[in-house]
Amino acid sequence: MTDSPADVRRASSEDWRGLRTIRLESLSDTPEAYGSTYGESAAWPDERWHAAAAQWTYFLAERDDRVVGMVSGGTNDHRPGTRWLYGLYVTPSERGTKTAARLVEAVGEWARTLGAAQLYLHVTSSVARARAFYEKMGFVPTGDTLTMDRDPSITLLTMVLELD
Ligand SMILES: CC(C)(COP(=O)(O)OP(=O)(O)OC[C@H]1O[C@@H](n2cnc3c(N)ncnc32)[C@H](O)[C@@H]1OP(=O)(O)O)[C@@H](O)C(=O)NCCC(=O)NCCS
Image 1 (cartoon, protein in one colour):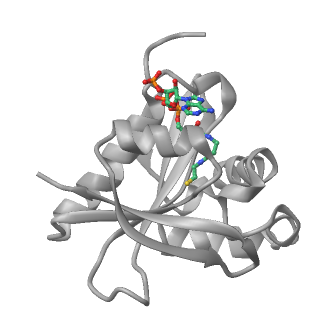
Image 2: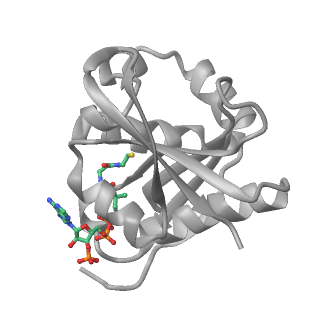
């Protein structure tokens, strides 16, 4: 394993296959971390992945022409005007390499460019590594908790990062 982070770039509609591959891997690897399930996402037709890659804001991490991580930047209907980090994932061989940090930095830069002073996220309370990672990146708990829509036994914590 290398210690250097992978390259991170904004995805375009042409990246829909890579997005599908890494997103399905994430839903299989850590199902409790995400609001969507592998089953429902695996059933998406190609056109839906293409539309998602074109419409939403994704950043992909790549090493040796392989997609090894992803994250998305978005909004939250319950918190108008705020910017959120969604769907962070790096493949196991990238953990501990700072690739995940680069993905978070890319979303932070995206939010900052749109005028945001904070970046929010939800993290599943039981996923200790993700919580530790976000704390290391400077996110702090807001104190808000909620349950996941698809599985109310899963508790989500809200965290926020002050953007410089
Ligand atoms: C969450 C994720 C993106 C973080 O990336 P990463 O490269 O693994 O993160 P890092 O290794 O830099 O940081 C994780 C920290 O947690 C620590 N850690 C590992 N396992 C832990 C555990 N069980 N409990 C507490 N801390 C733990 C590590 O030691 C490390 O801290 P350190 O750098 O001070 O030693 C990555 O692990 C991942 O993709 N996980 C699966 C998907 C996921 O959970 N996504 C989050 C969705 S909200």
